[in-house]
Image 1 (cartoon, helix red, strand yellow):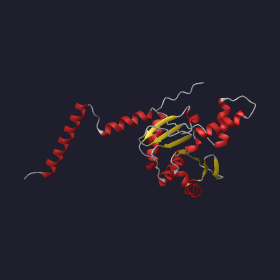
Image 2: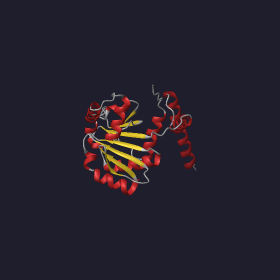
Image 3: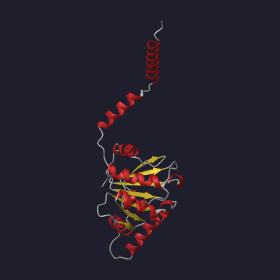
Image 4: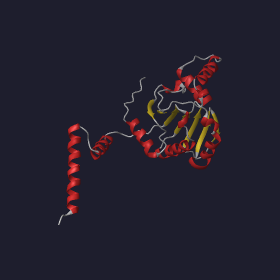
Length: 226
């Protein structure tokens, strides 16, 4: 009488070794080997959490309020202290009331919109800044005009301080370009001098997806010149 179970086990083993043989011949690593190699590689990489994460939406169809609120929670869990959301299409500004409600009820976050403080929490975990297109070059021009009215010399530090004090614009450590269009859509240019970029097809709103982006940031060789 045939041993059906034994035949099935032998067939599975034969298929497994055949797949392994083909993978080795073609130069591909099996999945378990890829995972092991990735874990070994990450053991040698010191995870750096960006203090300031910026998100630049390059396509309006990818702006989803639920995902935006979810990434706010993921930032709190990951230890990111500041989140800037640049929306050149005006979708987030039109829904700023719902974002403010989420900041009050769930994330305990301070909320700014185009330089104006909308909500402040005493025990804040995150600082969220929603930016529209007018916070791009227009804000830089306005800041320079303000400095021109003063007698002191215009310097890089003074421009940066004016942008931060007047418009609440600071330099992000890491910027995610969300979408397939390779553009910054007019993101405030002055604040991108030392920023690392990563393009992603969708907003990495879950903790796992955000951790993958943080790992990519950690592997960057960041050298800030004097």
